[in-house]
Image 1 (cartoon, rainbow, N blue to C red):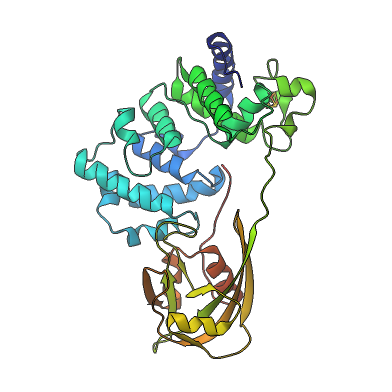
Image 2 (spheres, rainbow, N blue to C red):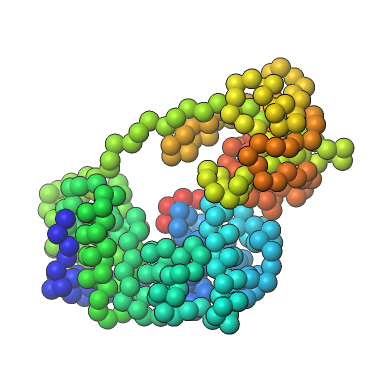
Length: 358
Ligand code: SF4
């Protein structure tokens, strides 16, 4: 793709900033855009809708008003404030980065993009968002909303995840932000994608870019960005054991931090069709038929988990920890989606929930 030229970018910047001045949503982190607020909000809003993230943000900031406050607690104390947002790796990375800020930067969030970008879990997007919004650096952002707006504006007919298109998108975003009010400009493009240039029904008549938008001129802007054909998800059958200790607490297992459901808790189980496979985890199934079978779709796998009643103390497998958890303590744990579904279906009341989309 051909990136935006500086004159094109300047014209779009003016239109976007004017639009943003009149249409920016009133959000808690915009009322008080100190760097910590911007950082936390940007992490929370990745893969979570803004409206869903707001109450989480307010609770989190009330409990952890600075990076030092977050750094001072163990990660286990953070999970109750994240339970429901999902994608717990974000919480672990933010916690690790807050400790870096506390230990290496005297508790001050670095204002140098290179230094900030070297913190744990800070990728290109987070660096651009925090540096532009909180510190006024001309650093670009490209997220799903920016991809959609730019692919339509420029009529990009190739896979937006391909390397050449990615380069063109980042170059265009860099051209757009290379002027006044860089933080507002980045937020304007993302806001436009979230509220006007929406995936299925863009309201082009309200768009400040309508006069220049090539996809709009074709009459079918919703065709873009190109959606590459997805590979069929692999079907995976698993068995899991529902076992309790002598006090009635439920045995759970924690995944390694890396990989699918990284760091999350689940019922001890493994890929298999036969419940006897649970003996490899120290559990003995006590019935031949499952208590329940749950289905859960990931982007590249579809799990079918048969949950059997079991006795014993779990051990082994790929898990990093086992813990007997009283039912009343389940709310605060980062539970994986399949476990959440199974336990709820079995009548346990658990608050954790997930959201998706900005
Ligand atoms: Fe999106 Fe329509 Fe605006 Fe083009 S004119 S950027 S398709 S909302």
